[in-house]
Length: 208
Image 1 (cartoon, helix red, strand yellow):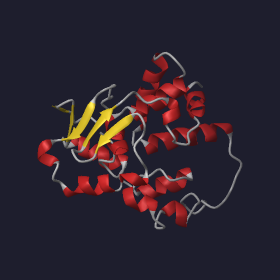
Image 2: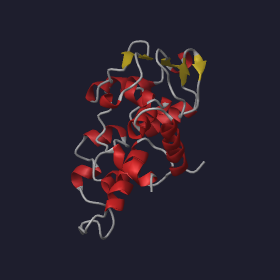
Image 3: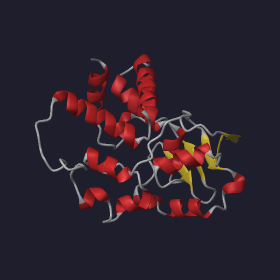
């Protein structure tokens, strides 16, 4: 499967905001957005008129990059959101939040969604006692996500959990820090997602 292997800080600069793609670095003054708050490239500091299409595209790219999805994955998620009852944009954001790699990140087991995706793929987690190594797996209410017993002594998990106070754990999740275990108290709602996203722009883009 294709994946982006370039410098992730350029992605944050291109979208003009922190996407928290680089773990601890994003919280320091070394963050690329803090140091150079303009898009990368020789024309990055030039400001031109932004079209309606450009606004819609940038919003889609921002969300796609934030959650670490490729184009086809993101489109498939959008189509699934369209088929569900309710507001398509809100359905999309909820589906993205329910991904296992995102839940692992939200619980503090990983410093970034990219790291969470790698850890899930390598089989570090159990969902309701069963090994799940699919990052796109959608969690359900009352699901229990925990670090596999034979991986709990890995130092990286202790480091990540120790820094979880920096961003906090969402209300729809419950974290047992001592046992490296999290529980889905309820499914997330749009109000629980504090990411600054105008999802209606993404709906408009795909509706053309």
